[in-house]
Amino acid sequence: MNLLASVKRTSLLLGLSATLALPVTAWSQEPEGSEPQATLPLEELRMFAEVYGRIKDAYVEPVDDKTLLEDAIRGMLSGLDPHSSYLEPEAFENLQVHTSGEFGGLGIEVGQEDGFVRVIAPIDDTPAQRAGIKAGDLIIKLDDTPVQGMPLNEAVELMRGEIGSEIVLTIVRDGIEKPFEVTLVRDAIKVASVKNRLLEPGYGYLRLTQFQLNTAEDMRKAINEMQQEQPLEGLVLDLRNNPGGVLQAAVDVADTFLDDGLIVYTEGRLPSSQLEFSAQAETQAPDLPLVVLINGGSASASEIVAGALQDHHRAVLMGTDSFGKGSVQTVLPLGSDRAVKLTTARYYTPSGRSIQAQGIHPDVMIEEGRLTQVEHENLVKERDLVGHLENGEEDSLAGNGDAHLAERDIQLYQALNLLKALNIVSANQLNQG
Image (tube, rainbow, N blue to C red; front, side):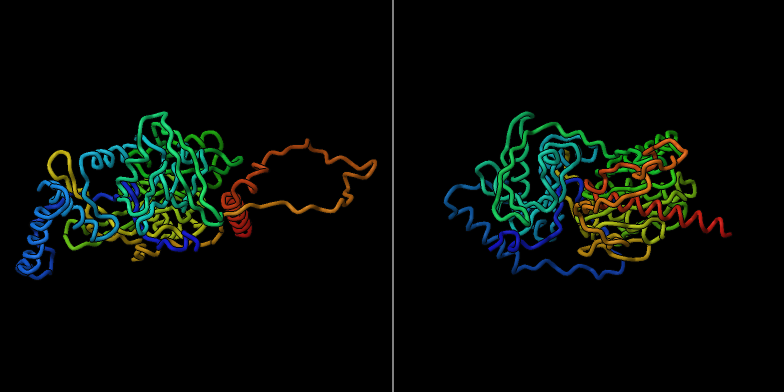
């Protein structure tokens, strides 16, 4: 039986991609419109106390009270949904470091599916990405340790280690019959959340790897740099394999291209989790033709940006369906070194769409693939005739872009072609007007 087929898809993301933070709330308040809470269920509390006592008395090894109570908290939260969790000191610190954009490890955003570890997305320019780890890969062993049934935080700890040390991942990949091993060397992961370049004169490319606190500011600087090098006629915003991040960063990125209207809103049981975020009138690029690329690794904050731009008809979305994480987690500190990460709301696109477990559907569906040229017959053309007239202009490849882009990234190649088509149509409409 194919091991991949036995794994049911869920939507657990770790760390950065699982956290869209809302303000910490006063949890003593009653949700608006709710009825007073019923008295505590005495029968269930007696059962809990009985199980607790039996573990203390009969378990094969002594277990201290602190361990049992923390395990109970951990289990209580993990039973709610895949994103709520109890953050012990190291996990709490790692979450804070993720948000700043610098951490140690392999550079993989991972999730858990029925006891297995699934790669949500490799982060650009990290050991995982350079070794060819792909979104959707299933990790079944870390060195000689099977991960099936292992808590996700323990698997993550095994993947971390001293910089320069090696770890062997055993991977199951859809389309490959047998598991295979990949050796990675741990490194300090310093993630630049924004990358940019000109695809060809007039057409820019922005890649957002994740949403950090400074992502929107860095993106706007990148747009300015490209505009100074060459006035832009179109822009590709690449959100593929972007696992998400900070909610405010997503709002600010969308606001760069919108000058009015709602960007995202959240709904939860508490008044403090019912928020709206709207675009500001002062916008850097409200009219620049825009194509947004998404895929199954585009999650959370990426889906907020894609959904807002799609609902406002501000961009054309291309690629494949996004991941489908439409819930918001609030990190609630417990003392100085622990926290609870609790799902407190769902978020919705401007038109009222919930992305949860559904994702964003692109306007133009383009699967990942490779474009290969068909061999042409050796047809004689004018330039092959003896004594043919010259064109009268110097030969130039300017404007032809990257000749190998279609072979390397068919989705990006099609996005560039669409931008060109949009400009041609727009120019024709102006001429006719």
